[in-house]
Length: 305
Image (cartoon, rainbow, N blue to C red; front, side, top):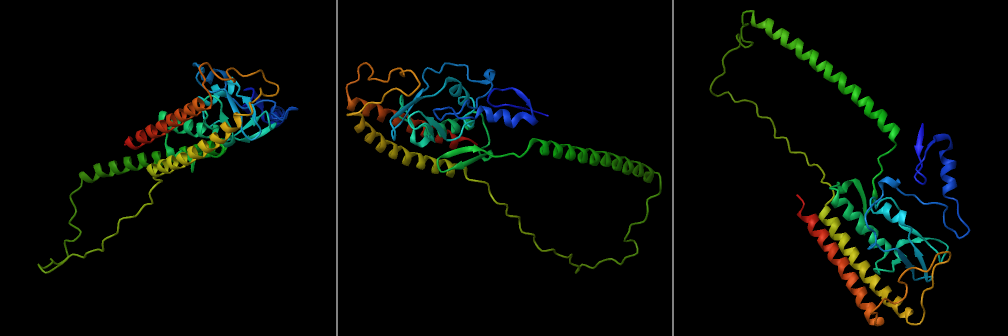
């Protein structure tokens, strides 16, 4: 039996699969893993990614880290591929994405990840109940169990269904044959031919009414989206407060390039940049666009049948 390696996408025997994967996850001297999980090259996003953010900053340590292109093209086709942590070149360790912010948009990596996941579910018409939701939105897919056990169960169920189908056909044929034979015989007397007739005062037995079953309802998708929107609003307020603190730090200190990486493009002030007020204005516009996208997503979800 063979398995597909999620790092190099090679088919490997099961007896060497674990050791092969361990070689990909070994730590480099800077604390980063040797390789990261991606989708197969032919399945990655093939469009233009010029507008996608590439550099993220960790305000706690001041480090700026670049996101590899193959990872960007991978989570653009499957945003559920990665967990909520990413490597920081300043800390030399993997930190929660809630502490990291895209340098181009000022949006946290965690908020961007949840937004892409919600848009992925709606765009592909997926069932929201197939995913695990937390306070911020869809977190991950639900586990469907082992493929080997599922295959055996499906085969067993298919065999039982085939047996029932054959039995039903045989039973139907026997009933039809007996029905044809019965038509050639004289009709028997009614089963109640010897019973006395019922009087006018006879009342049939009344059976008690059976109450309708009360099945539990599934999760309220509108409520989940509303709570997710409220949590996102709270998260945006906290992000705004952290952004203001971060901008105060920028007045006296600038971020240098990440260790081991070239100087990121457009790290310095862009053309026409007029100072801190201009940066705050752009940050506010970015947050406003995020709110509008969340409101539009909420309206589209409510309008679904």
